[in-house]
Image 1: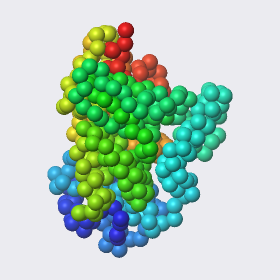
Image 2: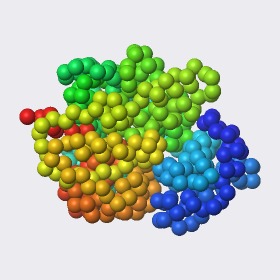
Image 3: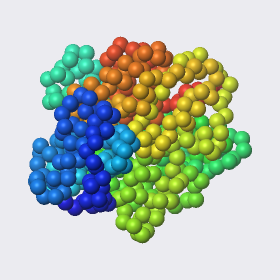
Image 4: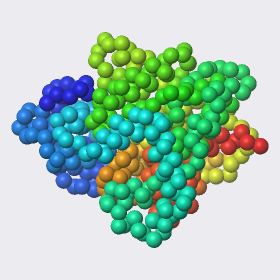
Length: 424
């Protein structure tokens, strides 16, 4: 078993001593309750595939793809098995040797590699919502007549009819007051089209805290969806493209407001290129410059909040790609606690996966909802007015869960609340 994803399968798979610690922490095993639904079970099957004892099959692919890639097993493993990376590498191998659905290729190699095509697609989605078709489907429950995965996507789909962030943010936003840093702001696909208020707020917050902010143009998708679905070669091309742009000027930092984007830059890019190559050196440079926005505010600029008070109660959900991948979890809380008038309350199991994992909520909807249910109960127990998080797919999932539970709590990014403090 070989893969273009850089991974020494033989040595890594030997590390698993089958102790089962991963089963106690995996959010999916609690729901599936079968060995193939545990990290240990998946690794055992991948080992057999690697050794040629079993062959690639749809049944095996289903098991390998029924994983949130939340990294909980990797963090908790006493033997240090990087299960999530083994899963990614095995997906890449299966993608290379098995026929893939046309729609998968159309999305990963089409829409998500061509910003213009993605913009057109989002424009059509916004039109679909504006003319009332989305409202009709949801109110009449007609979405139940749709195919299973389209049904799930229709139910969870948020409002995409707003102007994209890129059309609302100047290419260069000067620092307010003393200029401390010049930073590049990477606007991801989801925040650009679905949650544009997040980058708008992020740029404002950085400017207020002494940064000249350049909303870099010409970048494409970070490549995380491609990595998750085994399209490593496409992810490499996206990485090369983005690195050329983000490293062209001597920025002090590259800022992301999406946990998945910053995790891809910091963790994935250095892994997918061979040692000693020009591309890996570029990836290492970008990784060192990349910051989640909350991390940058706390570690570099310090947080200067405005004077406007907000008498609200706020709790926080840790995105997997932020806490476990980047070990960033104190900083978003510090941002929230810096806001005048905010009462911060910690929720139980704040770092437990919400079940979104990008498209997992569509591809394995029922299972995803079971994981989400536990998260929503934890959030509701805090009686918070706002549930903050730092990932757009988590925002989408949590917003849907709260709505289904009849809650009026809103899901926001920490910088959205901080930006409000600067308004008159």
